Length: 353
Ligand SMILES: NC(=O)C1=CN([C@@H]2O[C@H](COP(=O)(O)OP(=O)(O)OC[C@H]3O[C@@H](n4cnc5c(N)ncnc54)[C@H](O)[C@@H]3O)[C@@H](O)[C@H]2O)C=CC1
Ligand SMILES: O=C(CO)COP(=O)(O)O
Ligand SMILES: [Zn+2]
Image (cartoon, rainbow, N blue to C red; front, side, top):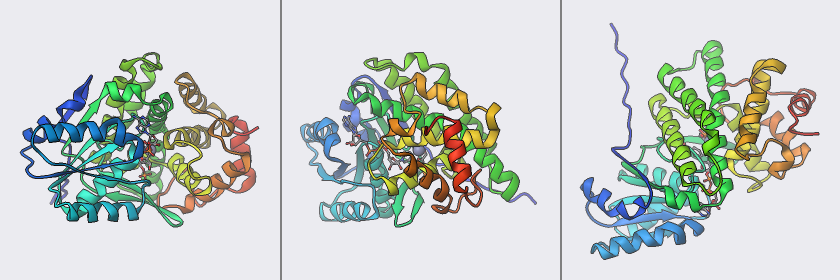
């Protein structure tokens, strides 16, 4: 008897475009959400979007609360849960980059409340995903949560954000190529659960973004449009898979380890992009797709070397040789690389000199 079942959760409304920030109150109304919102944000996005959105709620006769978090940690999730209880909030709205949205997502899951995602940067593909990503000591968790009830992505706001945030979003998408390679390998070697649809959507998203790289240029609002659609599509791939596997393989392990070794050195997307060049080399060797990945990153101004990430060679090598320990996720790194092999891949791909 065939007894398999799945439950794919997706946002009900996705609103993308010029000036849609002012539609948040209308979107909330359309979802029949009642009571008081708690806006979860971080310092810069607070001024950029959370305060204007709060003003829109006040104008509509709704009294919003705001909590500002500084980092993506379980302590921040706790802070938001306490704020929601103290402020008698009925639903949450994550306003910001990946960190604020992840924290809102995880707190809303814990509180059993709905949440909305209002990105201020096209910098990561967690905008609609059903996962939260949190460091915890020596490990990194991919925490199951629910996706947002709605996403309101204002391309005017996203286009005004610093350009490197958009190139980080592109790199997070380009890294899907190697994430899916790792996923297929893990299916073949370790029989991990695999979704053809999740994998195909993830790869197609990277393909479309690379094909449209010419439209990704600083100062063009169209760039925010192209990149945001890709970020949403990649997030949907994660929701279909019920895992971050379609968008997170060894290149993400490398980035997560860099977050521990050199906190705040570079953006998540930029780190996974450089990781992806090296893991593509490990998968395909000299004639694999590593040059295509490097050239795609280069064409949208994303870093391709340790120096461009602001890292020294030794930090890159340490991350490469230790990052397989960060999570129980089988990838091309297997049980780990030795230092000579790490130096070889990093040198051959031009990541280090
Ligand atoms: N849950 C998921 O599926 C995923 C989660 N992530 C997580 O997201 C995080 C990375 O996201 P990021 O957005 O790179 O980090 P982030 O949230 O720290 O934002 C990066 C920087 O951009 C600033 N910023 C945001 N919007 C701005 C604006 N409009 N103008 C000026 N500055 C602005 C923020 O204040 C921050 O300093 C990581 O923690 C990563 O693990 C990334 C991908 C997927
Ligand atoms: O960043 C992600 C996808 O782009 C997902 O993060 P994890 O590696 O924590 O699952
Ligand atoms: Zn990522």
